Image: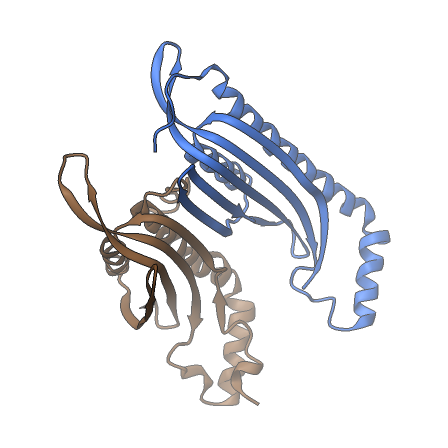
Length: 187
Length: 175
């Protein structure tokens, strides 16, 4: 029997958030915005995979997989996964409002975001059955409110949904900017 | 999974004309946020087509009423051929979106959302008895409350569209 089988709430995942867009976009800007967002929020940012499928007649198909981690406290960390897939991407030259020309990409983009709160990331409390039981009790009875109400909430509203809003802003989508983006905190 | 009961089935609004798409979506989100719903974004799709923008936006926020019951409101917004248009309102020019929008609202009440009472058939039986007979007065009251919230949201959306009554389109749509 593994420790995960009887430990209550070893992690708390957020619901996945999706986004699809078809049109002209600046892929470099989207990428830099995501990386900068995680840097500002004190995450460590990893590029797990970048896969270029054989380009079809309509353009390239590229998969980007990013992972960001932040050890918030000794006991818990936030993990965010960002999957971006582009289809039919090809370069186009656009004329900006000031008359300058710029090279952008045209095609379809699909974004998936999800995260989780992971407790005891160094597995200190899983070294023996007794410690694992203690951890389970701690998660279930002592920390439950803070776990669901603070750690998970902050991850979901301040990180996952904020990043989702940021990507929409960079893509200049109609649904950009949601009311609660700046509600919960000032830092 | 708990017992998911459909309380409001496909409350629909179909509108064609000038409106601000961004404000509409913000208004719906804000309405639910103010009533204590947690946000869940299911879909946020946008496609630029030759006839204008196509939008598909769906949220299903939830609100825990107790440790046994929660509300789920599913709002789906579909926008067709949405284009920026010059309009005249109170003899002033304004740029707003113009197109067709369909909004569909569903309301669910989920009982036993933590699935404590469906691990054994006997527990499931007890839960059903409890929901439909013992707890019936409360169950109905919770459902009425959800219906009331959704009617309120429906009214809000209608009022929002009514604000654009005085907008007169003065130019052809531009992309």
